[in-house]
Image 1 (cartoon, rainbow, N blue to C red):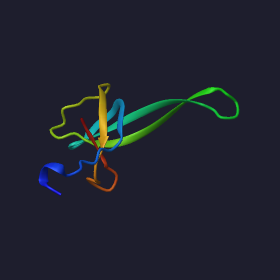
Image 2: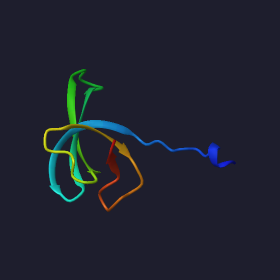
Image 3: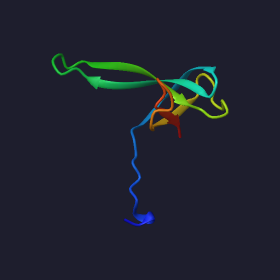
Image 4: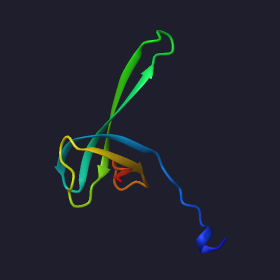
Length: 82
C-alpha cells in the first residue's frame, strides 16, 4: 500500500454543549440524544458527559461544539474538539 492510499479511520462525531472548562486543556461536553422508548412509545432525552481535549482552553461554558472520537489521550479522555 502506498502512502497516499493509507486508510484514515474516522471515529464518532457528536455535538453537545460545554458544561465545564475548569481543567487544563480539557472541557466536559454534555451530549443529548432524543429516542423513542421501544415499549411505551414515549420520547425520552438521554444525556451523557464526555471529556474532550481542547488545546489552549478556547471554549467556554455554554458553547456548542462538535467532538470527534480519537485514540485515548488520558484515562478518561478519548474525544477532541473539531
